[in-house]
Amino acid sequence: MFLKKVAAGVALSIAASAAMADGHAKCDIAEGRVSIVGNEFPAIQTVGTGAIACANDNVEVKTNLTADHQKINLAGMSTTPAEYTSAIVANSSIVALMNEDVVRPLDDLVAKYGQNLKKNQLITVNGQVMAVAFMANAQHLVYRADVLEKAGVAVPTTYEEMLAGAEKIKSMGLMENPLGGAYKAGWNLAQEFTNMYIGHDGEFFKAGTAEVTINNDKGIATLEMLKSLTAYMNPDYLTHDSNATGAEWKAGNVAMMNMWGSRVGPLQDPEGSADGVADTTKVAGPMTVAGGSTPATTLWWDGWTVSKNISDADASATFQALTAAIDPSILNEETSSQAVWLLDGYEPTDQAAGVFAAAQSGSVPYPMLPYQGLLHTALGAELPDFLTGKEDAAKTLADVEAAYAAAAKEQGFLK
Image: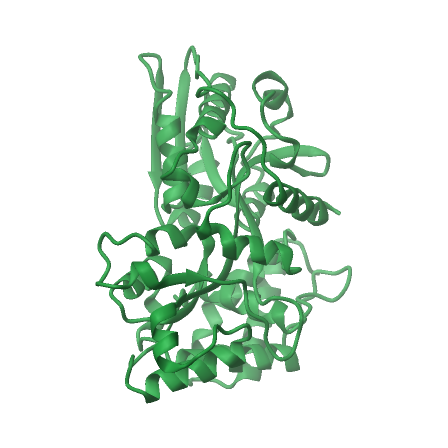
């Protein structure tokens, strides 16, 4: 039910926008400490900058925006007092923080300071508001229109068509490695498996249980498709996160890839791009695979939390600063292209077309189960053995299931 509400909220915000609020909300924070940890892409940088603007003689505000945020946020929120008063999170990353009881319910702060927040921004778990969402996201197709035109390749709607197009581009000598992707071993690679497995209509767990069930024909087909795609990628693909993949794109080395909507703006920015790349960078919806109708992607929200292990003054200051940071007045020509904002006044941009298409084509939210993160970690650690030829698909998936089971038993999800 919770996931359906989140999906409905994202779809509602995507489907309609309202008039932009006049003027930026004033912070008016009397005292407190604000310390934010989160990812480093442009939309989150905008939020961080907005929070910093609330600093004054009695209020310290600082941010640590890094690609390694998920490696440090839990540890930084587990101390007393917590090093970070807020973590910017998404569907998956909030679960680990909730499991360890380091984020606080926000209902009292919403009642006091959140009158202008929209209902679909309030991420509710078990009847309590645990985060405030400010943007929607999804991975979808990004392509070079000029390269596809030269090769006579239609914009793919399936991964099979993408593979055929990549082969044609390579055989014509237009590009050596025409495909890109955030396949870095760890979180990124696990996310690609999750997308592709969903596209195969796979089930991660036995119904109503925490017992994993991915070592099956659909899991094997998922791995085989991932490996087929890597044959057309830079040989160092296991080191490429979204930043590295974006750099490959801007250098003019890639013609097609599955990429986050929040990354499209920088890809279409001529600054730092090879000639002709930015102008010919286009987006389309997420692709399907194996004849299925469910897009091989996931819908996401990004939002912020408030630490549990901090004083009430710091909690109030953090909530107020971040609420001000996502006031609709932040929207302008530059920031509107950074994300699909869940804010009044957001007018969809061309860069948002892929995320809109994902929401409208039946894409499902990333599973927000308390043990999904354990499976994600196991996938990220074990899948490279298959892609590098050390193990076959069935053995790799068996290793994933064993690693997950050990972690799930330790956490009490399995006996």
